[in-house]
Amino acid sequence: MMKPDIIIKQLDNGCFDVQIANKSTDQLSFDEMLGLVAQLTVPENKRCLQWLKTKEQHETFRNRNLKTIEQ
Image (spheres, rainbow, N blue to C red):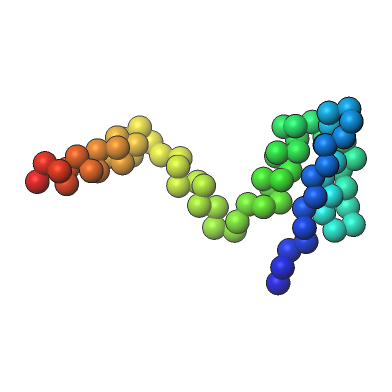
């Protein structure tokens, strides 16, 4: 099933109006508009969370190709 279109309009005063189906926000700041669009479009499996790692996990990820080259 297709989700409804999200329409973003920049208003003359610099604010944004986000429209989806029969609802709209009226006036949002840039940050508020981004947050709303992110919430409306985030997939159920939230793959973006894969980038949150511990320091050790980041080091392992950065060094993964070095181990292959050294062998």
